[in-house]
Length: 179
Image (tube, rainbow, N blue to C red; front, top):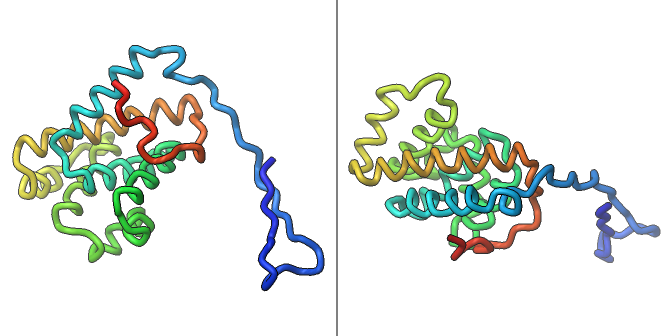
């Protein structure tokens, strides 16, 4: 159990205030331990996909797909990586409501976010106008890498959600250099 005590003398009461949080759920299975070749292949695929994507857009895409897929582990990882790379808290916070806060993002980022939603929620298909908007902002190589990176984060989300990977322990750059 994690507890947090209010030690601020300005707001502390006569007795310490302690809040108890829900217990941390353990992971069901640790993929890299039991399927290391699959994990290594995913790491290589992720690196290849991101090779042609602007790093800022790459993190925004990963965060947005992870929000849609309710992947707490990936949200923890990619928000920390984005912040470490200089992304603002404001843009990350607004990402779940990007359509209402478009003025925080470039037209290119908006096209990537719209495509991310269409690919992530693919049962509805990827509308031509969404694809065409993305194609207007990305050349064919960039667009191919963007689509691949969206597919890869969706795969990572499915691994992490299914295995119940535990959020909260990631440090930025922790997995860099793994191949």
